[in-house]
Image (tube, rainbow, N blue to C red; front, side):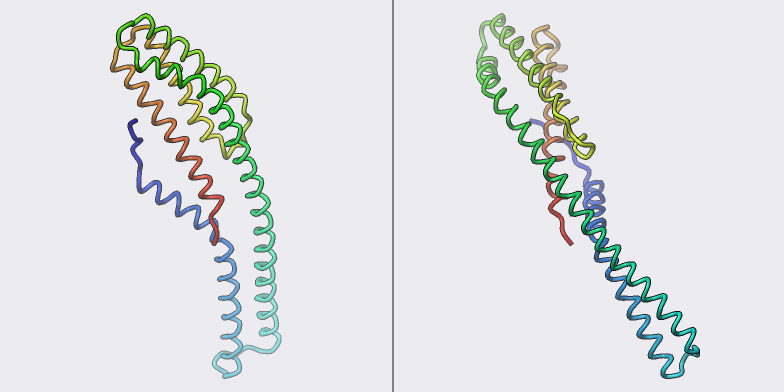
Length: 215
C-alpha cells in the first residue's frame, strides 16, 4: 500500500483552528476578566485622583462594563449548551455511520477475502484468474451500492466520499484486469484506491479527535 503524502503545514493549521474554536469559551472568560480588572483600575485611579471622573460618569462606565460582562457570561453559557448538544448529535451520527459501515464491511469481507486469496494465488490459469476478477468486481459493485444507501450528515460527507471512491476503484481494478488493461494503469488504480481508503481512515480519526477536544 502506498501512503498518501501529507501536508504538515495544512495539518497543523487545521488542528490549530479546531483548538482555537474550542478555546472560544476561555477567550470570552479572559475578556470578561480583563474588563473587570479595567473597572478595578479605573476605580483605584479615581480614588487617587489620578483621573477625573464625576460620580455620574463613573456610574455609567461601571454600569456599561457590568452589562458587557453579564452578556459575555450569558453568551458563554448559551454557547456551551449549544455546542454540547451539537457535539452529542455528531458523536451519535458518527457512531451510527461507523456501525453501519462495519456491518457492511464484515458481511462483504467474508465473501471477498476468499476470492481475493484465490485471485492472488492463481499463477497458472489466466482464465480462472479472470473469473475471480469478474466475481470480485461484482462483489465490490454490490458493496458500493449498499454503502451508497447510507445517509450521512454534511460533516461526514468527506469521509463518505473517500470510502465511496475506494470501493469504486476496487471494482474498477478487477473490471479492468478482466479486460487485460496495461499493468501500469492497474497499478495507478490500485494506488488511488489505497490513498482513498487511507484518506477515509484519517478523516474518521480527525473527526473523532475533534469531537474529543476540550479546553
